[in-house]
Structures are given as structure tokens and as C-alpha cells.
Length: 70
Image 1 (cartoon, rainbow, N blue to C red):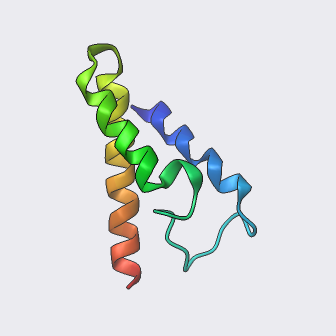
Image 2 (cartoon, rainbow, N blue to C red):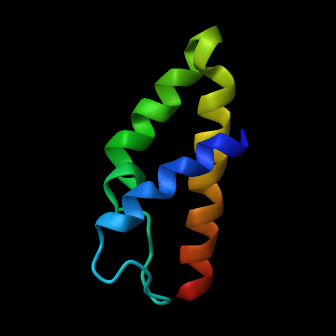
């Protein structure tokens, strides 16, 4: 599940790479709502279930960070 943190590689596409006031949900490609739907669909396949859980947990923690920014 630690390997699912590699999803943050899409932060390297942003300019600037880090911005303390930016919410990653909906901004970065691998943090979009459409891709989160794909992560959810991965729950239904036994071979990808643990990866999906890790990715969805990652999205949840990023969403909590965005919620605290408001």
C-alpha cells in the first residue's frame, strides 16, 4: 500500500510543483474525479483490490487536507 503513494508523481507536472494553498483533488491528473472512479472500479477485481484500497485511502487523506484548507 505504500507504493500507492507513487500516484503523487503527477505533482511534478504542476507549476509550481508545490503550493501550500492548492488542493490536489481535481487539480492533478491522477487526483481527478474520473480517475477516482477507475480506482473505485479496481475494488471489484481481486488482483487489484489492495491497490485500489491504497489509492482510495490516499485520495481520502488528500481530500481531508483540502477540507482543512477551507
